[in-house]
Structures are given as C-alpha cells and as structure tokens.
Image 1 (cartoon, rainbow, N blue to C red):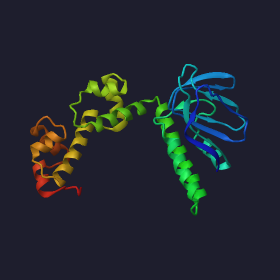
Image 2 (tube, rainbow, N blue to C red):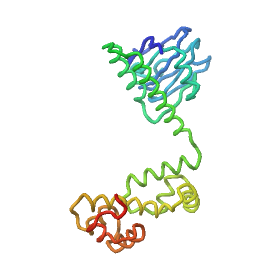
Image 3 (cartoon, rainbow, N blue to C red):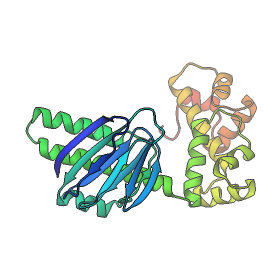
Image 4 (cartoon, helix red, strand yellow):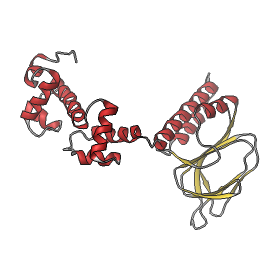
Length: 261
C-alpha cells in the first residue's frame, strides 16, 4: 500500500472549508468533532465519531458546522494500492458516505503505528505498515457489521454479554429481555433456540464456573463463595452446583475438580 499523506487529530480553523481536489487516491477520515460535508452535490451534517471512505476521483468538501465557534478536527489518510482495493472488496465498508463504528480510535491508532514505522524505517517497515492497515480495516469492518446487525442473534449476543458481564447481579427475566428489545416470552424462546439453554440456567452455569475458580485458587468459605458469585443462599448454590457438576461444592473444594479443571 502507498500511504501518501496523513494527519492525526488534525485541526482545521473556524470557517475553513477543506476542498479535496480530484486525486487518484482513497481518502479515509474519522471526524473528532461535528462537521458538515458535501458529497455528490448533497450536504450532510455529521457527528463526532463518524467515519468516511472516499473512492479515488471523488471530489468532496467538508468543514465545521456553520454555527460552530471553533473549527473541526479529524484523523485522515490518503492511500492507494491494489492491496487496499482488495481489502475494500473483501471487507466492504460504505464508500462515499458517512458511517458509524463502535469506537473512534481505529484510524488514529493505526496511523500512530504507521507513523512510528515510517519514522524509524526498520527492516520490513513497509510490510509492517500494510499489516497495520489491514488489521485496522478488518476491525473497522467487524465493528460496522456488529452495529448494522438487526437480527435476533445480534440482539441476543448483546444481551448475553451484558448479563454475563454483571453476573453477580440479581437478574429478573424482565430485565434480561429488556436488553434485547424482545418480550420476555420471545426472549426466552429465542435464547433457548440460539444457545441451547435457558437464560436463567446459562447465568447459573456461568456463576458456577466462577465459583470453581474461587474454590480452587482462593481461601474463601463456601458461604462467601456463594455470595461472591451471586447466589441468594448457600443452599441454592449447593443444589445448582451438584446438579451441574455431579458433586457437592464441599467435595469439589476438598478433592479438586473431578473434570480436570
């Protein structure tokens, strides 16, 4: 890839409206502030965090909002090369229009790494720069796909991630379902279909896995372990543990994991 020129957190003065002449390069930008752009004669008002990838020979104007007291800032890159063309086809991100990702650091992080490589010129720096850009582009594509998914799988993955992240919480089915946007009955049915287990049992199993770690590598009493992983009582903890593992938590703690954990 040919990294022609780039800028990181580049400042544009108030009233400055950047004109990009027709050039034979791709242009990638991540806006750090709100902005306005004109693409193919249409005006677009965008927000901080927006990305934009323009194809070669595309003329675009972009600048700060008319009401902005200051200018605007963005990360940007001009590049070319068949390797990058292949990337855009294999991992198709929107071209010639703004789009959103789940973070605003993909481009800046890549540019900072590329800048270091091009500053020191160590052996293999060109190949290294290609790998950095490829890795960043794939991450951008994954983020875009995640944001664009409107299927039940995407909603369930989000809900499950939030539940397991806060597994100690005393979750209700209503609270779980709300994360997905489905009704409680629909959520439970889709969850069982997708993961092969009910949301409640999935949470219980996750708590048990966490309890096994505490018992094997900690000095906590069983009552403390039970409370630490979110069980309401040591009795319920013991019942769930034995049902899943085939052994009581007391025996598990005394003899170690029967399954080789």
